[in-house]
Image 1 (cartoon, rainbow, N blue to C red):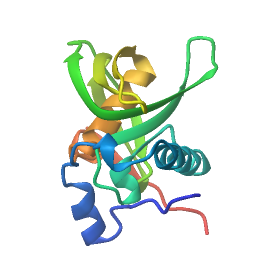
Image 2 (image 1 turned 135 degrees about the vertical axis):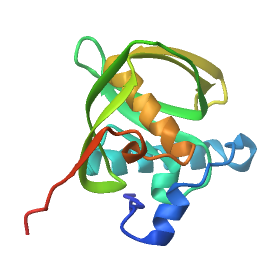
Image 3 (image 1 turned 45 degrees about the horizontal axis):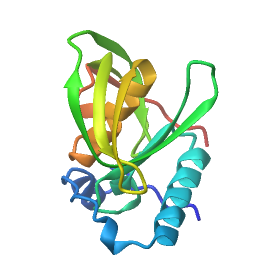
Image 4 (image 1 turned 180 degrees about the vertical axis):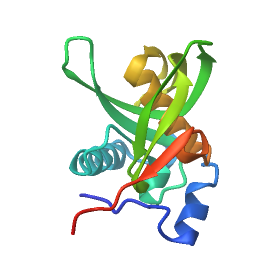
Length: 166
């Protein structure tokens, strides 16, 4: 099922996006419910042409996100990460254009750490640790920011709004 994406276009929705999420509690979901939730978020992300989607972007308070980024061979690599925390960031930074499904028609030159270490849990509740660089590191930082109540426009050096074609 495709979920509606919460955007900053309404003040109350922006306020919701800017609240920190709560820890994900695996005991409140059956395996089937969790699979369905992940599948729904993945489909929503793909249909919106996104590379990541945090739970609060579909109106949920729990701390988790999904992402899909090509691996070094160009094959899509899917992630569903629960209670993620970035535990290390490189001093090396990269500034590139970023956009966001919750901030429609806006793009900005956004500095991010080039390398990060992300810790959290997979869908089975197993502890995971991922060392990421480049686009994957950027997506992880962007989604963890969402879960912490931050938007890319808070970090962007410049923001450009484009007028959608009618």
